[in-house]
Length: 203
Image (cartoon, rainbow, N blue to C red; front, side, top):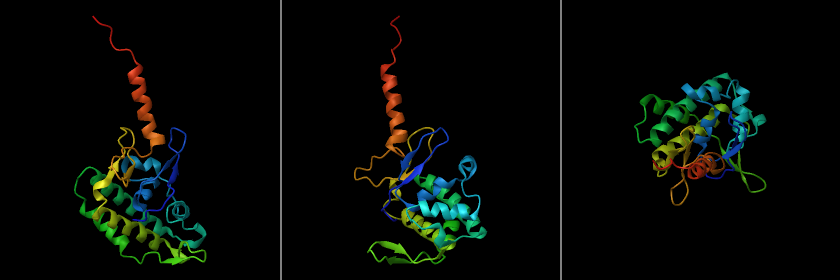
């Protein structure tokens, strides 16, 4: 799992925006849409969409340095959907489906991105890179997450109407919300209103 990130700015359908840091590259990828009910959030419609998202992710790959084709787009959506099933299963203590594991393993078999040290001493990637390399990086991140010590820290947001998944990397391990400024704050507002509402009059 690559730890360093500034998170992703998400804009939910009900308006506003918030910063979401799921703590792992593979969980970031879930914000691009998904299977079933998550299909309404789909943003990967053409190869350029995948390249644009990779530029926003913690990989920080410039879209102009990526070669992403239709096959990469299809593979990316299959990988993402498998990751959704695996992330939710992990969060709720259920076993992973064999077909989802096979999809992640298939993507992870491709050569990954090659890291390098940039002239300014920062972490960078050898470019240009192919879409399969980027997807391999995501899949390998998932293998590390779901088989490593942080697997027990994979959580689904505690809000009843939010299904974002994150890995709780906080020291106490008590993170409940996708983001405090989003679902955490909404919970506080609801709790405050409930305390202020008058109780039933005595009979």
